[in-house]
Length: 463
Image (cartoon, rainbow, N blue to C red):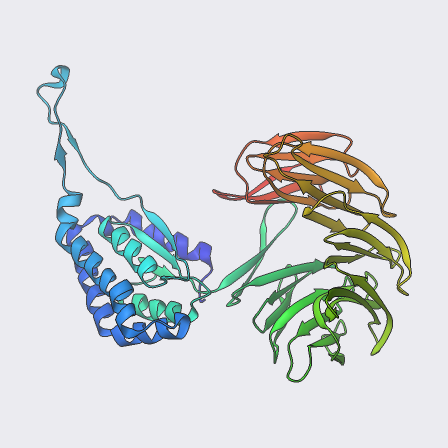
């Protein structure tokens, strides 16, 4: 993408303020141009829908392209009436004046479409937005990439980016402690996953093959894996481990030094690998394996030296699934499964174990402590959040009567986000303070600040 999203939005705002889109003649002219371009690209649209969803030419036209053409034609025929003034009765006190309603465009719109009807549910609302006199930023689903590419081609032919712009990639953004944007890391990843350590940001495409490392100022490393990426991690030293698919084996684990040079590749032939975690010093690596033994599902904790292709320990956990692994500051591994919490040494010795009191709802696993939640907010007992110390002793608990969204901690504070409420607590959950009633999708403590994502965008406040 050639322009940053904020630049696109700035250009569209300036274009709207010129008043160009207020002209109904221009709106109709652009809709006619859009209709001609869709007609010209009908075969490309059908081919893209077949590639993404396996739709036949008949289904593509009847369920997507044909409906889009009908919507555009309807708006061409009705745009003047929809934009016309409507006379309304005048109050007696203003009897010598004229009263009317005048429909006015909102201005700048965002259209995000799903994968299942990617052409219809992108172009239909776009036709309505153009007919109403708005500009638009269009974001097709990343899970229908062929259709997204055709949409971008069609709209690029019809509209300048200050009128209609198409965004087909993904982005990760780096902010400082004061909420100022430092770096934008844009990519075409369909399912971007991020890990941070040592001032570096690792972003990889889960289920794809793209991976990049950035800091607050620039991109440090970009690569394309030969297989499908299943997991990745970065250590504070800058060392990287990746897990990907490979022919003839269950998984391929690759270790890179801080200069992004490949040190070795481990071809795993006896278990799947579902996760990887590097120690804080970058000298050890833990992998979560998965296999079957008879009729039993067995999770494997596989511990490796990071700087040499040698397995140190292999721990079997029968009838449970490893969902998280984190190394603490003394090179011990905190493991969360769907049944228990574990603490292992770097040699695979079990140092502590604590069974979960209920079905795991969500968790937060950070160096030096673990938080787990279980229960149902609709039940009288509600949701219970438990706090555990670094040796898996229960430190405290909290009860919630709302749907739990997330638990996040930086080791010094814990944020519990529920539907419509945000709580701030100490690590032991001895005290919870209500911080916000606003709608938040996610939240994170950073130093003395809280970052969150709301319907209005990124928010930043002090703890």
